[in-house]
Image (cartoon, rainbow, N blue to C red; front, side):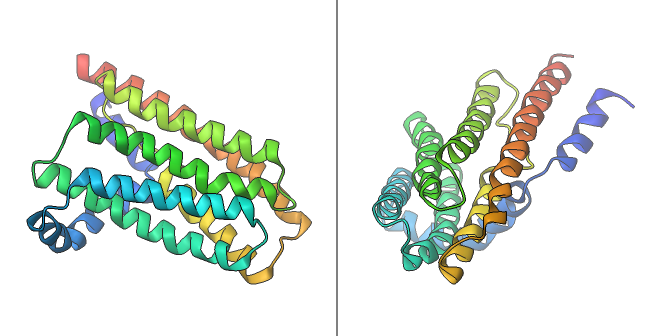
Length: 219
């Protein structure tokens, strides 16, 4: 089997929930995107709105880390953020709003939003600041590899198993748990090391697939 035949199978094996759900979500939100475009709403405005809300919610969580209501808002906002990201992309691609500044805002905004929303978990026992910092560092590294791969001609890498949407699902469930229970049991401390391992695997997958894509593309 040639490398050109192997690569699609490798990508499917490492597919994330984002890569599987993104086409369906874009189709579902296309009518909304059309209305927004006709009313003069831009992709960059949606991106900035998403960043501002994420940072504001993250700041509230940091100042009042034990507030169940705020933790309950996180999964709801993560769903809203995903929908805004899909609208942003649809407006950019389908309505001629794609730009370099928009691409920068999208990538930088995703990283800033993830940090703002997930860093406050360092204030929730039994998680520690070092554990959460490690997971976030590895997650950011994975996103930077994905972006750099695009710059090098290997396409934007979104492989998992812990891509952006997967992190949102897992950590959104953690926030639901906190909101429902008010506190986490000591056994929940194992979650961060597991996420760190998955983040390492994600980083390796993206590097590997980017290298394979470059080889098949230049061959």
